Length: 479
Image (cartoon, rainbow, N blue to C red; front, side, top):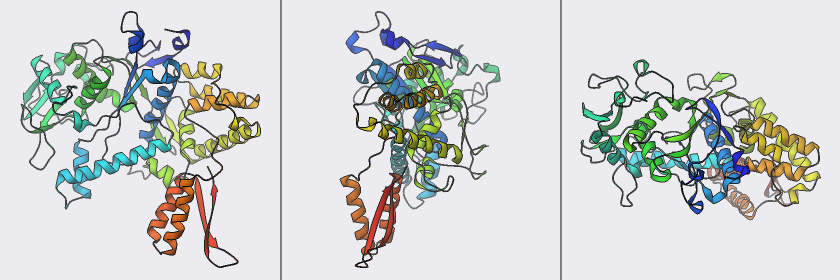
């Protein structure tokens, strides 16, 4: 391991301590140098509804960590897996509500494809790289032709090893079979309550036992299994998909604070008991909650805000906000602390980005070579992602006239304040197409193109040519 890679320290939820990060593959005698990989898993979306602004935080936080790991260890040496949960009772309910005239499986396909597509659009607009792999739960339920782990197989292993049992038409994990259960959340078993998606019923040996497999009604999604046609519980999905791409034990597992219990606790139980390992992941990282304008976000409070609401509508502070401003706002608070997401903070972020862009252009740094991140900036970023300090260093670099290093440092965070000043051929073509749509009186399609361009920072204004009286469209690029 090099001095460079020694620099990274991360707070481990499992130990409640900040620790020097030492990837498993870099430990003496583990694997050949050419085969070394840093392996990270982060729980992704359940695609029944558009992702809300709280969902954006782990995506942004772990995207920064992904970028930092790639910088320290090499781009090809980091494997980042983030799943999509596309089998879930919430999905079933949304599909039945939104498409009552379709067979349920067809309705589910409509919901999951639309929602997953919106998620990808949203996180790309927030400046996030695609993960190395993005497995879908439905592809890992039944045995696979490629031999990768599957949920039915892992459940069968847990039953065989005495960690699961069949009762009441379900397969349940027996929490009392694992003495270390509760180590991540620091909860005693006798104090445990069943997880949010598990009903406490008489057929359970312990109220904390959780579902691995449940039977499906004839109209519900289902797979044939030794325990009847059914579908998996929530937790088993991530145990299987992480093992499929990262191995039985891997380096980092991340997610929101709300996932510590029951989801991550139950993942550990399943994985360690199925594989006979002491740990599922060496480091567990969890980001804090997001509230909106000083209140916990909820639909009943009227402040439930999706990523699309922020980027594509004027529901937050009366304007559409650029993705880089949302990203900067998120990164200015330490990832383990709560965030109050407000229009005022978004406006502050926009002002910072505009200031950085002016300074970079004035110094000619926008035309310079990429440069390398500043060392003091890296020290802050490697100190458990202390990004507020890292961003303060960026301000100092700009003030000192070191704009090339400042930009390189920001770009390591996935932020580039310097925007294109000319229209791309694609954008110009879309503006021309919109004008044709207006002339054809297809106003709905024209409005859709206008809104699409607005999310990309191209604002259109319609008017008339004073000489000919013909409709013309002007544009400006605004953050």
